[in-house]
Image 1: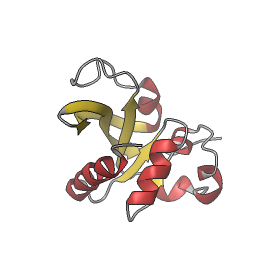
Image 2: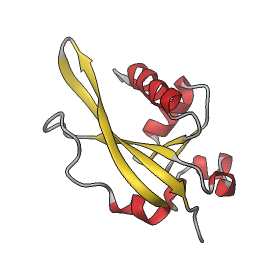
Image 3: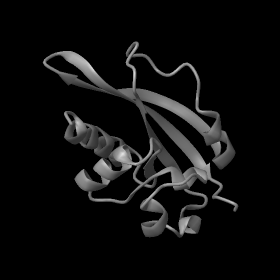
Amino acid sequence: WFGWKELAEDVQQLQDSHPTSFVFAYDDYKTSALLNFYLDQTVYAGNILGENALQFNMIQNDLSLLKGKDALFIDSDKRIKNLDKNDETPLLLNTYFEEVRQLKPIIIYHFGKPVRKFWVYECIDYKGVTK
């Protein structure tokens, strides 16, 4: 459970530099749920990408309000091999956004050792979900 508050602080800084963007994560529910807990804003889940998002499907069911907006996508790296950017952008993002740019990853350290890594993507012009 270490590092979630630190992640939220880093995401808040990103949000401050991208004030019109919404935030979402897609790794089941944990990252979205914990960011929702720590941040004073709505953090979306996999429903942004047309995927099942557990409780987020019910509490965030009108995504049409987000069409045309930019987003910050936070994606956890479950096996930290290095501290670099991801080699590939998740293809699913290109289906729902006009443009996707990878930003510097968020690295959470504990006693000087990297213990968590999150890839960050700036996603431009949300197209919405068509189902």
